[in-house]
Length: 368
Image 1 (cartoon, one colour):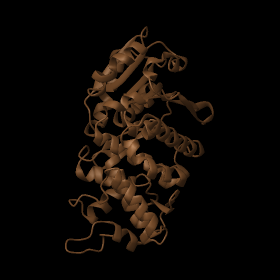
Image 2 (cartoon, one colour; image 1 turned 90 degrees about the horizontal axis):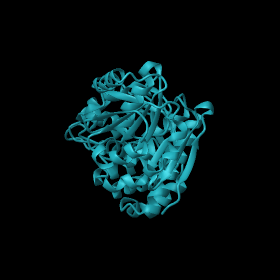
Image 3 (cartoon, rainbow, N blue to C red; image 1 turned 60 degrees about the horizontal axis):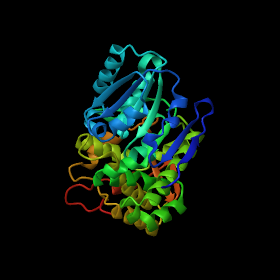
Image 4 (cartoon, rainbow, N blue to C red; image 1 turned 180 degrees about the vertical axis):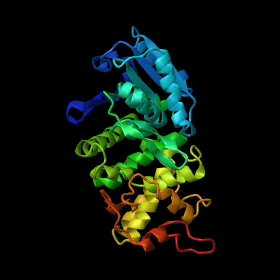
């Protein structure tokens, strides 16, 4: 069995550990030290609860427990769902000493974290992520929130967890599509900051997709190290942290434009990263060979390299104009200057963007 690894997200008095390993849902000592009150609320969903709910209940034995199961899927990541959670918490008379535990994938973590951030102006919460995407990305960093029909994650708050407990055993029941979506976020870390990790992924991708235990653990650990370093340097995304959004501006447009849930978040981000790589090449910032390396690895992971034909360039522009990185009405994008080197910039040419977005019918200009 792979030994548990513990990393730290260094944020002063908001610092917290990330525990990564097998069998962690049988280790109550990882949670109990951070529970400042006795009363707990668990937010999970109808997919995760039947698989692992009994393990978490046993882990929390002895605590008064409010258990909330949400329907599964991105389309439920709404203010209405948050309101339903808050109603249950008020009905249970939960106070400021209570702790909320997010137990599921990225959607559950985002919704539950936002509920914790605004309930009585903020209560403690814990992340117990069960999908690869949530384990390597959304559970770390304190971003919480919900979608709006006009834009992805446009309503939310920064609210750091007290601890993140990653039990890699939960990946055994993960559908292949969800696994590939999580691998997209892992590839992202290699592209934005760690060329050595990208090369490691080129060598070990098939083993990662096959869930080889040592490879999975190494990939999760290295991803979390990368994210923890970036978050510690820029907690509220005033600058450098935005590099974590490589592919997300294009990807969020795909998710919103196609209807939340039709494309998984990681699938849309994978396509968005391929688009960002092509745009970076159009700008002369990324070599053709590096662009091809990025596309090859994304394709090997089973991710689409091109956006859906239903989304026109005009629709992309409309959706991207609502992106959170827009400042003073100006779109900013995360682009690449090489494998392992990302920049956040508004200094791109209209020509490069037009060449990246879908071409008008009968025109091949955007097919690079």
